[in-house]
Amino acid sequence: MRTLEGILANHPFFADLDPPYLEMVVGCAANMRFDPGELVVREGEEASNFYLIREGQVALEAFAPGRGAMTIESLENGDVLGWSWLIPPYRWRFDARATKPTRAIVFDGGCLRGKCEEDHELGYEMLKRVAAVLGERLDGLRYRLLDLYGIGTSTT
Image (cartoon, rainbow, N blue to C red; front, side, top):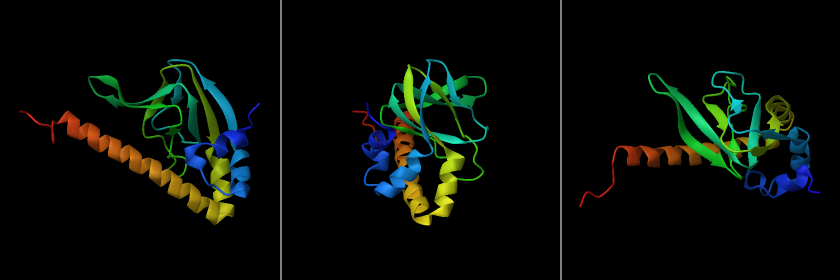
Protein backbone atom coordinates (compact mmCIF):
# COMPACT_ATOMS: atom_id res chain seq x y z
CA MET A 1 0.00 0.00 0.00
CA ARG A 2 1.32 3.45 -0.93
CA THR A 3 1.53 6.08 1.78
CA LEU A 4 0.48 9.70 1.33
CA GLU A 5 4.10 10.69 1.85
CA GLY A 6 5.20 8.37 -0.97
CA ILE A 7 2.48 9.64 -3.30
CA LEU A 8 3.38 13.27 -2.59
CA ALA A 9 7.11 12.66 -2.98
CA ASN A 10 6.42 11.42 -6.53
CA HIS A 11 4.02 14.24 -7.48
CA PRO A 12 5.47 17.05 -9.65
CA PHE A 13 4.08 19.75 -7.33
CA PHE A 14 6.15 18.41 -4.44
CA ALA A 15 9.15 17.25 -6.49
CA ASP A 16 12.46 17.89 -4.72
CA LEU A 17 10.78 19.18 -1.54
CA ASP A 18 13.11 18.48 1.37
CA PRO A 19 11.98 15.40 3.36
CA PRO A 20 11.35 17.32 6.61
CA TYR A 21 9.04 19.71 4.72
CA LEU A 22 7.31 16.80 3.03
CA GLU A 23 6.60 15.33 6.48
CA MET A 24 5.12 18.66 7.57
CA VAL A 25 2.89 18.85 4.48
CA VAL A 26 1.66 15.25 4.87
CA GLY A 27 0.35 16.18 8.31
CA CYS A 28 -2.21 18.43 6.58
CA ALA A 29 -3.28 15.89 3.92
CA ALA A 30 -6.02 13.28 3.50
CA ASN A 31 -7.54 11.21 0.70
CA MET A 32 -10.90 12.24 -0.73
CA ARG A 33 -13.34 11.07 -3.42
CA PHE A 34 -15.87 12.98 -5.51
CA ASP A 35 -18.73 11.62 -7.60
CA PRO A 36 -19.52 13.01 -11.07
CA GLY A 37 -21.52 16.22 -10.70
CA GLU A 38 -20.38 16.79 -7.12
CA LEU A 39 -19.26 20.33 -6.33
CA VAL A 40 -15.71 20.35 -4.99
CA VAL A 41 -15.51 24.11 -4.29
CA ARG A 42 -17.94 27.03 -4.67
CA GLU A 43 -17.00 30.50 -5.88
CA GLY A 44 -16.98 33.06 -3.08
CA GLU A 45 -16.78 30.53 -0.25
CA GLU A 46 -13.80 30.25 2.05
CA ALA A 47 -10.86 28.58 0.33
CA SER A 48 -9.89 26.30 3.17
CA ASN A 49 -8.35 23.48 1.10
CA PHE A 50 -6.39 22.67 -1.99
CA TYR A 51 -6.34 19.43 -3.94
CA LEU A 52 -4.02 17.23 -5.97
CA ILE A 53 -6.10 15.34 -8.52
CA ARG A 54 -4.92 11.73 -8.45
CA GLU A 55 -7.48 10.25 -10.81
CA GLY A 56 -10.53 11.61 -12.59
CA GLN A 57 -11.49 15.04 -13.83
CA VAL A 58 -12.66 18.33 -12.34
CA ALA A 59 -14.09 21.24 -14.35
CA LEU A 60 -13.37 24.82 -13.31
CA GLU A 61 -16.56 26.75 -13.93
CA ALA A 62 -17.46 30.43 -14.13
CA PHE A 63 -21.01 31.73 -14.10
CA ALA A 64 -21.99 33.87 -17.08
CA PRO A 65 -25.26 35.82 -16.90
CA GLY A 66 -27.70 34.46 -19.43
CA ARG A 67 -25.56 31.38 -20.07
CA GLY A 68 -25.13 29.79 -16.65
CA ALA A 69 -22.09 27.77 -15.61
CA MET A 70 -19.38 27.54 -18.25
CA THR A 71 -16.34 25.27 -18.08
CA ILE A 72 -13.20 27.34 -18.43
CA GLU A 73 -10.67 24.59 -17.78
CA SER A 74 -10.58 20.87 -17.01
CA LEU A 75 -8.13 19.48 -14.47
CA GLU A 76 -7.04 15.86 -14.61
CA ASN A 77 -4.58 13.37 -13.12
CA GLY A 78 -1.63 15.15 -11.56
CA ASP A 79 -3.15 18.64 -11.69
CA VAL A 80 -3.44 20.98 -8.71
CA LEU A 81 -6.79 22.53 -7.82
CA GLY A 82 -6.65 25.68 -5.77
CA TRP A 83 -4.33 28.50 -4.94
CA SER A 84 -6.79 30.69 -3.05
CA TRP A 85 -5.98 28.92 0.24
CA LEU A 86 -2.60 30.69 0.24
CA ILE A 87 -3.49 34.18 -0.97
CA PRO A 88 -5.80 36.52 0.97
CA PRO A 89 -8.74 36.96 1.14
CA TYR A 90 -8.80 33.10 0.97
CA ARG A 91 -11.94 32.90 -1.20
CA TRP A 92 -12.58 30.63 -4.18
CA ARG A 93 -12.61 32.48 -7.50
CA PHE A 94 -14.41 29.71 -9.44
CA ASP A 95 -16.65 26.72 -8.92
CA ALA A 96 -15.02 23.33 -9.38
CA ARG A 97 -17.12 20.26 -10.15
CA ALA A 98 -16.13 16.61 -10.62
CA THR A 99 -17.04 15.46 -14.13
CA LYS A 100 -15.80 11.90 -13.63
CA PRO A 101 -15.30 9.79 -10.51
CA THR A 102 -12.37 11.61 -8.93
CA ARG A 103 -9.82 10.73 -6.27
CA ALA A 104 -7.77 13.53 -4.79
CA ILE A 105 -5.50 14.36 -1.93
CA VAL A 106 -6.98 17.26 0.00
CA PHE A 107 -4.84 19.62 2.06
CA ASP A 108 -6.17 21.66 4.95
CA GLY A 109 -5.18 25.19 3.90
CA GLY A 110 -5.28 26.58 7.44
CA CYS A 111 -3.01 23.81 8.68
CA LEU A 112 -0.60 24.39 5.81
CA ARG A 113 -0.63 28.20 6.19
CA GLY A 114 0.17 27.74 9.87
CA LYS A 115 3.15 25.55 9.04
CA CYS A 116 4.28 28.07 6.43
CA GLU A 117 4.09 30.86 9.03
CA GLU A 118 6.12 28.78 11.49
CA ASP A 119 8.76 27.93 8.91
CA HIS A 120 9.24 30.66 6.32
CA GLU A 121 11.45 28.46 4.16
CA LEU A 122 8.54 26.05 3.76
CA GLY A 123 6.28 29.05 3.09
CA TYR A 124 8.60 30.29 0.37
CA GLU A 125 8.73 26.82 -1.22
CA MET A 126 4.92 26.59 -1.23
CA LEU A 127 4.57 30.10 -2.63
CA LYS A 128 7.00 29.33 -5.48
CA ARG A 129 5.09 26.16 -6.34
CA VAL A 130 1.69 27.87 -6.24
CA ALA A 131 3.07 30.74 -8.35
CA ALA A 132 4.24 28.20 -10.95
CA VAL A 133 0.71 26.75 -11.11
CA LEU A 134 -0.71 30.26 -11.54
CA GLY A 135 1.75 30.93 -14.35
CA GLU A 136 0.73 27.74 -16.15
CA ARG A 137 -2.96 28.62 -15.80
CA LEU A 138 -2.38 32.14 -17.13
CA ASP A 139 -0.47 30.74 -20.11
CA GLY A 140 -3.34 28.36 -20.81
CA LEU A 141 -5.85 31.18 -20.58
CA ARG A 142 -3.82 33.31 -22.96
CA TYR A 143 -3.75 30.53 -25.57
CA ARG A 144 -7.50 29.91 -25.20
CA LEU A 145 -8.20 33.64 -25.65
CA LEU A 146 -5.96 33.80 -28.72
CA ASP A 147 -7.85 30.83 -30.15
CA LEU A 148 -11.23 32.33 -29.24
CA TYR A 149 -10.47 35.55 -31.04
CA GLY A 150 -8.64 33.91 -33.94
CA ILE A 151 -5.44 35.80 -33.21
CA GLY A 152 -2.36 34.21 -34.67
CA THR A 153 -4.32 31.75 -36.81
CA SER A 154 -3.82 31.62 -40.53
CA THR A 155 -6.78 32.36 -42.81
CA THR A 156 -5.13 31.10 -45.99
